[in-house]
Length: 454
Image (cartoon, rainbow, N blue to C red; front, side, top):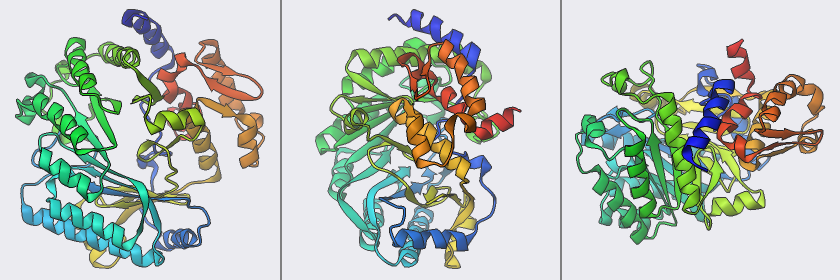
């Protein structure tokens, strides 16, 4: 189908249903967390972990916030730093935090995946290796587990990628913004295209099992022609996964965006056209659409898991393993243990202060209610499998689905009439036409979103 045909269809749907930007890796979102931390309740859930009452696996998420210059497109906490002493101090406190968790857990937990995000490049190879070694020393790293690292293509070399593989990292995540110098002017980097493509090629040669590209669209001064050029270059580099990320312009949250003129931002129609073009092009060259903007090669484990009904969706997006327990290390990291979601302190002073007092640096959290757990389960079934069995929900939760979700089912009739879903007494099925608006479909079950709109 032509982009113009897709555009006409989906622009009409978006006008009718709106655009819900929530990706539901977290439910509820961080803004609903309480600015307090119940250490006793958290410790109690950690003790449940020790008895293996609810955790099937453990994920360790490490956040490195430092950058030489702030990225205007980044949606996560970051801070400018060129001071090696500050970076060393942060590294030392990460080790302290790992030790504190190992003391609280006592019995070494089994870690199925480690995710090092933010800007790990700003740690030296020795520092990064020591963090990974400390995790392996204090916990039990599953053989063949997933060790994933985000990287800035401007800061990696062939030798540094080889060093990461020797440390044990087997998944590389590379963020891609735009190759046009006019857009990259705030970053003062005219070599970004060569650096990015070289990083992907070197990651292949180093032997990473999975290479994932996070491709932003809707950037300042970007149009469909420029975006199409980038996409073709990325496709030619043959990564295993390509994740389409919409650029958000939020002056209230991201100070580094204040120098960007609103006149330079592409319209909603142009952003939609970019996304639709990418979906058609990636599908035509052999990528499989997993959902939520993520595409993968046919042989990718996520595609196999999707076909087998084993796909999971959590804090790190799509996965083949459950992240029912996630320990967050570093400032602003988000984790969960049992029904508790938590976020670490978002500034260095608070982070260091709590660790110096031998306290976990958690700033805020929320304990999920029974209703939260039911709704999260419903959303994850739709996101992972495109099918929700009403009987399966009633089997796991003590509810009468049709009565419990009477308001939601009434609202979903409109989606069924638009052929975004099929709806009957046994199940809800998201149609291929509805994939692009899966956020909206999940939003029907989002109690917090409904309350805020009211």
